[in-house]
Image 1 (cartoon, one colour):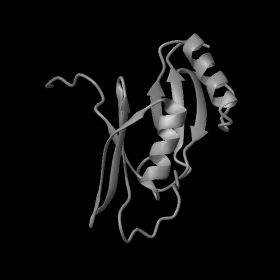
Image 2 (image 1 turned 90 degrees about the horizontal axis):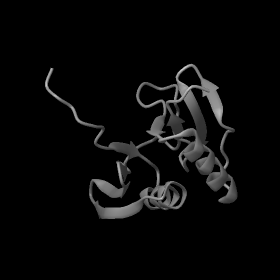
Image 3 (image 1 turned 30 degrees about the vertical axis):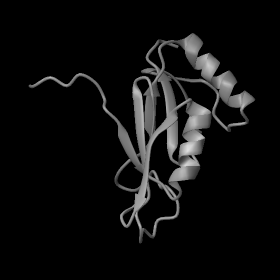
Length: 130
């Protein structure tokens, strides 16, 4: 197989790109690096080291909220380097008033979960034994 070096970005359809950009910038520490609007809707790109998220709306969409049971995206997961960093994320989210789960163990590692303004599930994950 040809090489793939890393995950490039994710593009999420949202109801309000500005509101979503504010959430990701405030909660995950991204910065808005691009913004445009036109007949095809708005597009805002937020990024930080190792992470880029495109947030866009689509004119005429009837969807008003995310549904993980529909075909498509179930959730977005971001890798965290260690348990200590995951614990720091948890403390940071709680201090910012963001509703999130406790740190939970799974057979694959540790994770905590939260939701963005459109109820898109976001997971912070560390691949470390519980």
